[in-house]
Length: 391
Image (cartoon, rainbow, N blue to C red; front, side, top):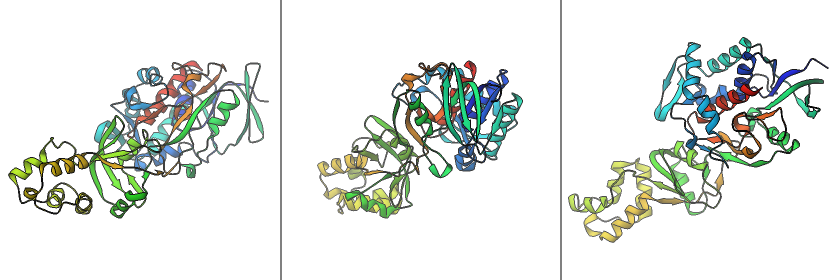
């Protein structure tokens, strides 16, 4: 049996590498075990290969969790500006896209290289292609069986993520481990995922490839971004965002003409009486979408021949067009997993399990899920940093 490590981190993703780098630089003896053949695989594919590494608008209200206050501590102590300072210290050029999203000018590989360099700076060892077969805890010491070897440590950090994008090797191992140690798990489900349509809504699949800026609404939550019709249903940033709030049976409403004032169709009846709904919609939306919506509304006549009551009904429908998704495209297409290791089991300051001293959980493994646009990376950096302060 080898000399004990201060910490063994399971998973060389964003959270695990961040935790290892910081803990190593604090003088801790750290080992990272990764089952894939290389570290940071999800980082590499993120942001179309340019890594949307954080969001400057990061705030706790951009995260979903059974405890909406849990993320506050870590996010306030390690901010988007802190991570950006690290990126700049490594000379990585970046740019801001819409809604505060920060991307590398070059490649996601730069972020992985930066994290590995930071690990090396602190002497943290990263081993890939390692299969962990057992984790035990006896007399305050953790034993990790991996590749035929038994490694020991004072602390173990669960940083294996969630089961979204299984083709990248993602699994629910974090939850198995949590349950083994008596920690509750909030039911995991796909988040930031395209929604599928059936029934009458299936007609909209014919619009596959058509995109438009809309408001997507579910309950009291709405997002103003692009929606994309697909051969299976609905996708695009607005839909991915709202999918995290959607539950089976819920309706997702689309405002196809956001920002229009109440009574705008009555006003057009007065100023352009010979217009039709079809021509009006074609002026504002892609042709195929405009035609489909006009056909479904069913009013072919000039506005001047339609009653105000009919116009008000058409206006209301366009502002809250209901879709009843019959499901989602599942974990295979979900960018992240919602749910995970219950925050009630962890310290929000240290990410340590309350019942099992020395056991930590960080990143996507935990029941904290961010919006689309760099928020989940920022949670990985912040939670990894928070755990590293305690190791």
